[in-house]
Length: 253
Image (cartoon, rainbow, N blue to C red):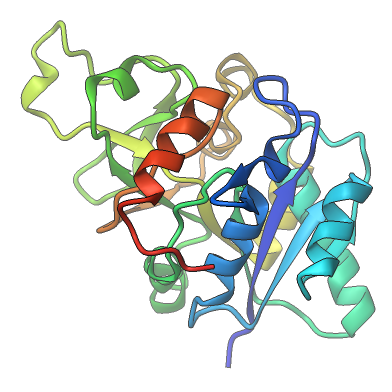
């Protein structure tokens, strides 16, 4: 049976929202909401938090979770996730088959979102990596550079990711389903390692989006349209919005 784990990369020094992982929603740090939601996924054998900050490490241990200290030098979440993967394999002696990278700024995560994202890799050996996507819910999201937009082909593979509003509303795109990246990204274990050995690419750097490295090197990213509504937290304003939404939904913590 394939072994699938979740890794949540998290650090305190976010440029847009310092200290974000420990910002509280309904009295629980955001990273806690992500951890509790991820742990309920039927697809995951275990969930780990990969961090370079002792405060995050200590909090995760205080709630009975598993945390792994990683280097402070990582620029990308995928780098931190890959280091954590190798440390877990060394500690446990087990070979991991699939790694689901779960960003720590998705506090509204429900376990089914992870299951949705993992399933295509379990069913098709040709899929190396997948990425959950969801409809943009309001026009402000389309214009928000913190929301990564994605356009896909007719087979559900990503054509491009951007922080700009794509496809263009001004040029007749209003009848096209507008999609955003949801940072739940399952990798085949060996492809995650290979990905981190690939050179960074111009579009990846310009847009500051990891997935573009995959596309620019000629690989494919399978997208999965989620059935669940979600808002990521990139700013204090996002946190306030999620806090309000939380009061109308059931908590998974």
